[in-house]
Amino acid sequence: MRGRFLSPGARDSIAAHGRRAYPEEACGFLVGKEVGGIDTRGIDRAIATENAAGVDRRRRFVIPAEELRTAEARLVGTGETVLGFYHSHPDGPGRPSALDEAAAWPGYTYVVIGVRAGRADEPGAFELDAITGRLDPAPLDGPAGIGVASGTSAPHSERVYGPRPNEGTA
Ligand SMILES: [Zn+2]
Image (cartoon, rainbow, N blue to C red; front, side, top):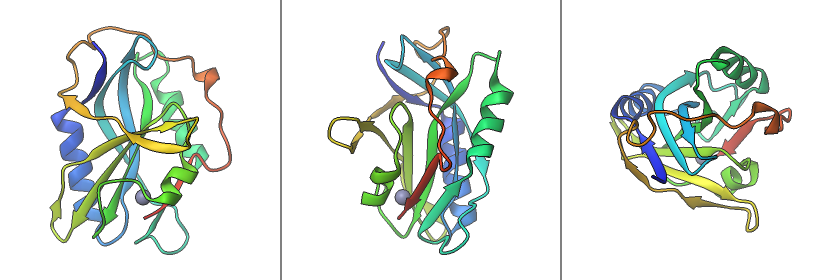
């Protein structure tokens, strides 16, 4: 089964973090399992991180590379991996900005959620098309766990780390 599955727990965590961080951007990791390369991804949980942007956290977020390395190191041997990142757009749409696209890495799923005061929209998921450089919609099909009972993670060595794993502007 191909698809992207976001567990209700992960969805709730992302929405709650977005509401809590409002009016600043919330951000964090998407953690779960993948089967058959990246054909099927089950996002089981979301791990909140601090928004490390030095300025303008209402329109920017930064997740330091060290945070990603730490998160991935903790998951070694668990069958889970960091599948991507989420962040919120305070008073903005649940889709990536042009700068989100410019900062996106291939191979990761990006979840974006629009948040208004006290209320979070339904999150959207996107993945980079390496040819066009666009973050294309990767529709969320349902709860994690469907068809994701077992599987192998992509080798971590295939991932390339830069000084800024993820950085965007709303
Ligand atoms: Zn953004």
